Amino acid sequence: MKNKMTEIEMLKHRLAMVKDDLYIIRKFIYENKLAKQFQQSTGMSDECWTHFNNIEIACDLDSEESLNWELFDKELTN
Image 1 (cartoon, rainbow, N blue to C red):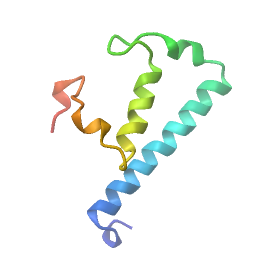
Image 2: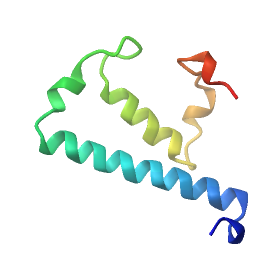
Image 3: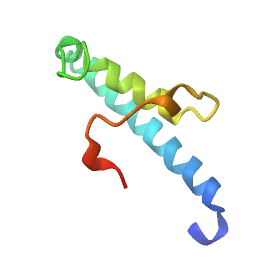
Image 4: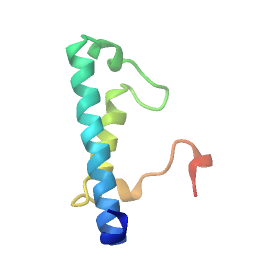
């Protein structure tokens, strides 16, 4: 599959896979009545849910919002 896709197509596919997993994780959290735990602060945000929302925003190629963000963990820079 990789050889038939351009780099941009591969990146878009990867982002779609991240969003798909995010949906499944949210569904699992709600089905198992764990949502209240995710309302707690992470130290980087008032609620853990904010990080889920940030992932969705970053995966949205039609949004430029995340382009000005900085990493929480500077060691993750490539």
